[in-house]
Image (cartoon, rainbow, N blue to C red; front, side):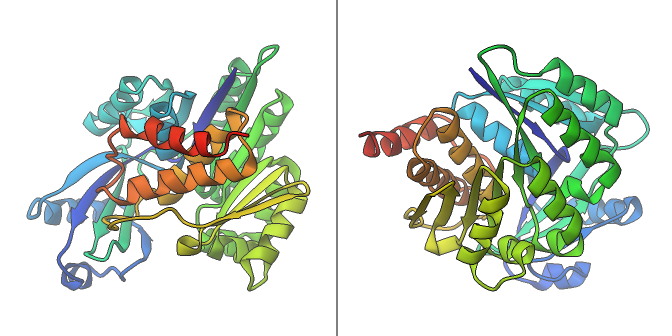
Length: 336
């Protein structure tokens, strides 16, 4: 009875495992950073990538969450834009393979966006992102899609929004207005502390006026609130929304909904291989619990379990068959 629609930058992740920092230094990237690169720099990077082993997977924060939700049996759709090229075919093909409703448009004059992800032995990631066609979404087309996917009687629709989209005010504002106008709930992942900090007034306005469920990690929450305490930040986020979640890494996660507040410790993890998409999978687990009517505590537990599953593999290539069983263990634990 609930459909979850993701909207964000549609990217293909190219994953590179490095033995140390030397290649990053050679390429001019600082460990742990996220670098937006233009087409010429992207082509030079492509030449270097031919000299090393790479793997690829669908990417983009909201897309990761929607893929994980689909694996958990949720009804899902995805809105984004890719190029009319082989990587675009791959991205769309993976949506259809997972049974995700494809609402992806395609540009004929620009290539599909690529996030090259450099992974160090300790799991630290460094990104060189060529957005390509990803930001080329048309407001009018997207608002028509949202109208067509509006909730029918007895149904709910959640629009899960990738935080990186706030960089384009002229796009995200009318999209959120359209979503609320047709009766959708809005789930929003803050995505990056520096994006929050650099556009704080606009981000606070969006959260306060349009967002029902908000996800943040500790750094994002503190950037949003201007505090140095994650729990205080949770309070500010919760005052503006129906439900707020702040993830605090190895210390677990906080959640608040009205007067209900919960903290759950992080799930056990044998070995961290790659922290790519940990937050995206957390959101998937939490939202799967929410649409199933689970308690706030159970939703947080489900988010933690999903995050641990994805950080033990390269990229987002989790064995889908393991995921529902993992969450069933959590829901049975919290049944009254």
